[in-house]
Length: 106
Image (spheres, one colour):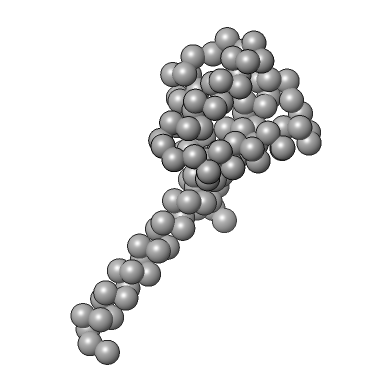
């Protein structure tokens, strides 16, 4: 194997590792966002965990950058929670930072 092949393999491994890390961070963010929204809707315990799982599944099954924000905002509005899309997006940004810290600490 040549040096070029070794470098190519290393870049492929790094890319795969980085993509896996980003996926884990997004899934953690989605779960945290689901739990946050569940709390605002008055859900607790098993109901909150089930709702958070649904939010994670929405991100996996729906393409697009705003699928989670739109789902959370719609669910919150349906439950009578007065919150703007901007506030939901801002909270998701905060939760993304928290998720990154948590995953990196593992």
